Amino acid sequence: MNVTANCLRYAKTMVKITLIQENEKAIIRISDDGNGINEQDLPNIFDRFFKGKSGNFGLGLAIAKSAVEFMKGNIIAYNQDGAVFEIRLNTKKDGNFNEAQKHGTNDKQIS
Image (tube, rainbow, N blue to C red; front, side):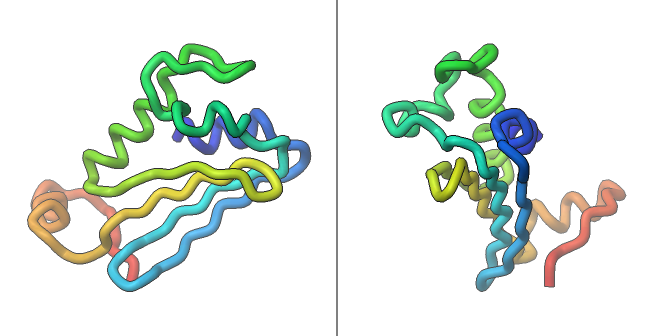
């Protein structure tokens, strides 16, 4: 995903990916030890065509946000010893999960 690629691009030495289950949510936290995201840019980084100082096209994070929202999740970004992205997805079985199973996907629910 673009979020991981961005963290790899801006990290000094480390990218950390953590998966946490909290109630009926899966939280995927992707962080790096880089300089973080410019505080003035933070409100806009998920907007289409918004490029930070050394951004490429301004599409990657907007597409990532659309993909997460399509799965009825949300994504946020903040700074904490580098850039941190949190993706929250519902793990509760619903019509979408069951529909995916009918189509033969191998995705597993976190339990």
